Length: 308
Image 1 (cartoon, rainbow, N blue to C red):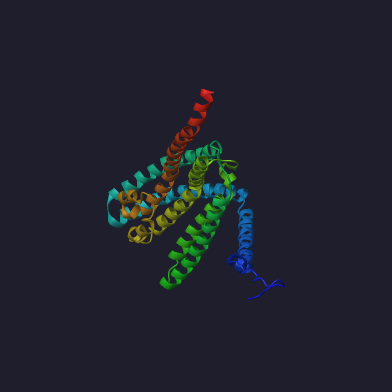
Image 2 (spheres, rainbow, N blue to C red):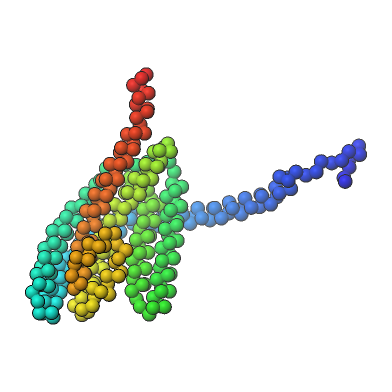
């Protein structure tokens, strides 16, 4: 035992002081990794800017409109081909009915897409910090990379280009979602002081606005997919059976079951035109619930002010 000049024993080192150098090293390493991840998030936020989001959504809307118009023409040609191939007038009449439905739904989709932009800007929200959006945005970017790489591997294993195309579509949607998440102001979400309840309402509102912002990209991708499948139907009578499995994961995809197999392509285009309508209604219902929650949160404060 070590002793000093007065022959008194020196105090033994405490456990905390014994592990202090190791803890300091771990904290330094953690700070380095945190700094690296923070720089990656900052670079991704700058690259996926609000201007890029706006241009992507506007471009998707234009491309989707052209895809729907082309599908209307191709639907008429497809109906003629199948009516002659199977020698029945019913397929032709079904094609004409879908054409009329496409014209009406395309008009409604255009109106609801325009209304979506107005309601996003007219419905402000607030969260206390960007911690949650930054983490979610980073995870979405990593998921997009994983989906893209997985599509390449699966395409090579199956010797098919279909998994690769699906991976590209899903990865693009994930990247656009990450861009919106990393830039909350692109959907009217401000950063400021907020209570726990206001933070929860702000995050839910952020989710609803993100879904509404993505509807133009969904409209575009589904319309393009339906247009391609309509053209594919010119040459492949089994197109409906081959393509239906790719769209089983779509919300409310059961509505496509009423469409004849020969018209699965135009049916998907019709589904694309209905997507802005259903998303808009979903946003309105969710916003109504949030407004009720806000009213409940401010009720105690108003009662206190009334008593005073």
